Length: 109
Image (cartoon, rainbow, N blue to C red):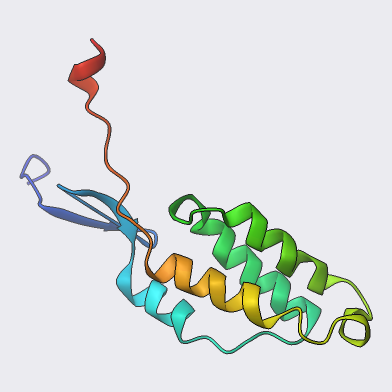
């Protein structure tokens, strides 16, 4: 039974099929529908989840840097509007992430 070919494999939040690797649709939809984090601990939790899917996101580090500053104390009093744009941009990037193609191993031999 272990030698049967499969067209799709769900594995730890990723779907691998003949087209390549992508984020699991259920998890990605949950990220898209998530409310904006307010507390620094919740921001850290969100960034941890996003870091797991970072390889699917274009310009992830730039947006991550903007949200990382929200984990510091008293940031709200200094920049009340800093959270909205990067949070929405990160959610949209993950939701519309491309499929990562699998390597063609025979090409390099």
